[in-house]
Image (cartoon, rainbow, N blue to C red; front, side):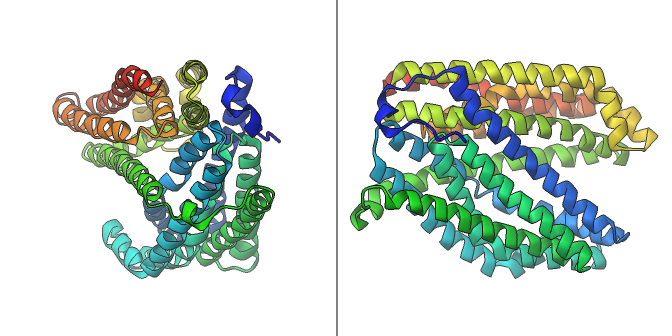
Length: 445
């Protein structure tokens, strides 16, 4: 298990391929367990042979993902701030950042759990899937949101661990979380016959047990560290900085969700078959995204640590190496999809009509990894450096560019124009942040 560098080495560290891969590889594996969990949930509920239950589960999971993606700042924001404290060898600030994140997680989690009836009703109105789908969806959301405080605390724990570059520990925590969840899914959902409710309770139990393990590991570590004074924890300026960072990351996440929602909505205007084909192809981009996220996480930690240590060469090397590995991985993913994507489409859907349409637009999907790699990696660098205002502003600029491309290209070129607009969105995100990077590096060092 990767323990990261020791604090004594924090100011003189060297960024190598090994240090990038030590974070990126285990976190890529950790991120890939998320779609596996979704597959198990679907398979368990699918055993009941009721389309309404499957529809309710899918709709409930969608609403849940929208809500919790908005709070992903507790993971990424904590990673950046802890990495900077680690880089300047400030053990007290590492503790303070973690406990501030936990305080925010507890408050936000309790509010979300209390609002679960309203969120469930709002989700039913938005999906409008009929009485039985709505009933299953309501059950899933109300139960699963009880885990909100546990889930958000787990975000804070993972953020702290990754901020110290401990990718192996992060992988272990995610495997425990999703492993317990999967096991209980089969037990409660199938063995006890609880169906959708069993799947939801499995998530609650998994998040709770993973939270206990994560807190036990972190608190045990803090007991061996210097005592954290209360005034340091409740530092108003530091709290405001964290809230500002989290706000900017949340706006960025909302903009990203809005872009994908518009993509899906516009695809629906081209007919059911095209909508289904686009959904199949987007899975390829999302899976590639899980791999790219691993290198974005490495960029967060290494860039943040370099900023904290005020070490310009490690910062530049972190940018170069994460970009090198990201483009290499994206190029490989693109090649695989160009050569074997049609076979993968055939595995995902048995509909000949959907297959035929998906094969036409497959090259657009294949190149999304290359178009998006710079956006993923730059996000990691800017989050780690806590240059969140630039990241937020460039995301909003990219969203406007996407909307303009969508309104211009889709009416003329149809679904080709829609996919082209998505590429515009990804490219503008990455290139705009890259353009600002030189200015920020000059100012920081």
